[in-house]
Image (tube, rainbow, N blue to C red; front, side):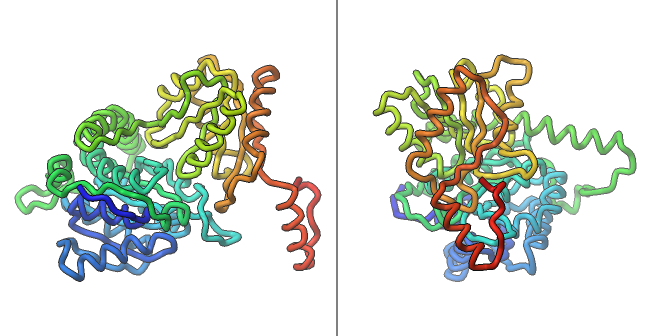
Length: 411
């Protein structure tokens, strides 16, 4: 094992290298390009034996990735934002083919208006595609999650592709100390892929991706995907336990931080949860019994763990770094649904971090105060946008310069 300062993108490339992937179809997009550039450089220098091919779009990239995986190759690729959305038709197709591969999404907010920093509307737009989803909070977790992702995707009881998400700019270009495991140790954890389902063999003909002209057959295959995703919860637990034993880093479907005696719990995901942890420490120093729960696996959705860890709390606040226009925070709705038929704590919905917006001083104090009130007055599903008066004045001035009126309903 060696330790090096790596960006999140470099950590993703290292994971693909350690996984000894056979094929890398690629199409560049900021902020994910560094991943394939790093891999391309290693291919050029002969340091890895993978076949890297640049495609003419993200849609073609995913078509090539799925087709290669259907021959039994171990496949890696990466994208972001508009690119992931452009490929979304193929996400559904590849998942339906039941071929295992790992796709990294470097989260970036979706246009319009166009921006480069992250929120999670891109990755969550793919939540119904059949790809399993692991959301990471550190560069080390990026590397580890890709290795775990291959074991999970290739397990014969799962056979679903995996999306690993890291936040653009905040994680993709941030350097952190990363333990790079020895290649031989990784080979013991992640042996060469031996396909049990889709593979290319002249003596074993197989039809893949055929049409089913009948609802009964379609429903059967779709429900098989649902059962495989449900099975992935158990399989992931087994794989993560082995990973913890081999490499000393342990991962669950969720991560709890100072939850043991917490009356109030904040739920977050991805790299901004590290800001949440710092705020929890600060609030605790002021006497608030607050904890944080990070959602690490979004598909399959960890209903049981969430009910177990959030049930009985005085109040829960979900901070969504996404916005389902016309509904609110996506994860708030999914977490609330986990309590269907069970006693639920009062829950509040906050939307923050859109377009990579940093949290402002005092916002976590307001969230804690709102949770304390909700403990007595009850929760609300109405989403509250974290947005300051200073920001509103700045945007108002920009609109004035652009000769636009400021809508009073914004605030």
